[in-house]
Image (cartoon, rainbow, N blue to C red; front, side, top):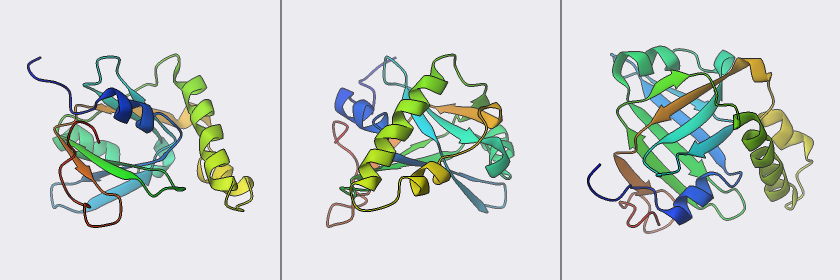
Length: 163
């Protein structure tokens, strides 16, 4: 593939570090659907991103992806409010990979630690991310655009060099 991936090594580390992740889709009538993810995986070449979702929470999202492939993905660290948005047009749902369960478990613990240090009971983030593994669906896409969404004067600017 020509050109460098939009996701650099530092951003790949951030996305897989136990941050809060969300995915959004849109249907044919442009009605959006948003769901909280339970984890994220970046391919070794950093050209593809996978968000892990709980199927019962997805509503029409999976049908939207099958219909048009458009996805907006957001990752945010609660303690710093660092937030990035990635967009793609080829989102596809599939079964989780063999290592995804362990990856998600490690990301959950990092998320719980990040939120708990500010006085939140660890049960709150565990509840937010809870669900049955049998309900997990992976959605993989190629980022075609990336934006800074951290609150402040740079919000909405294109992400340069992954940062």
